[in-house]
Image (cartoon, rainbow, N blue to C red):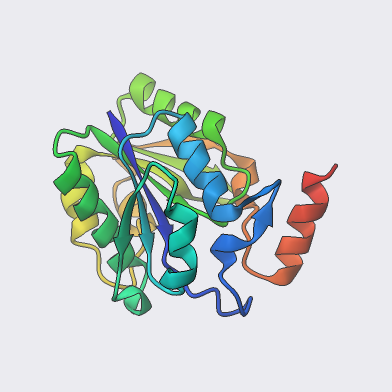
Length: 197
């Protein structure tokens, strides 16, 4: 069984509104990644929220997810990863692996997640990291043997640090569309334009 931890606690300071709730193809960015994880068979699906939690909470009301509120989200992404991973382990102690997902990579769909899981199963590598734009990162899969490493991340450290420190344990999954992420309004406009082509 493979679970998923969706990191959705960030403040979206450049947008002036929760980036997680931006509309994309008839849904919000957050609902898009939740649906992808659920359709790919991930269980459980944990969503970590923090900033704007009162606005984001209603978006989770009818989703089959575990909601985790990270009161320390301002400390950095590491604190959200720890919160999500701990909740997943507490709820499903026998889970074999987890996927770390973010909600500002709109190209991530159920097929991408299924392919990441399949890469893990065929290569037997403990980490499967997406490769794009001369880097590697999320979406990424971590076998349970790495859970303690995820739980020991510093507040400002992302999971990429674990990936880079363990190259012999990593299988790379080619995902060029992973370079498309929503950090600015310009990114958002480009994303909307391409999604209508």
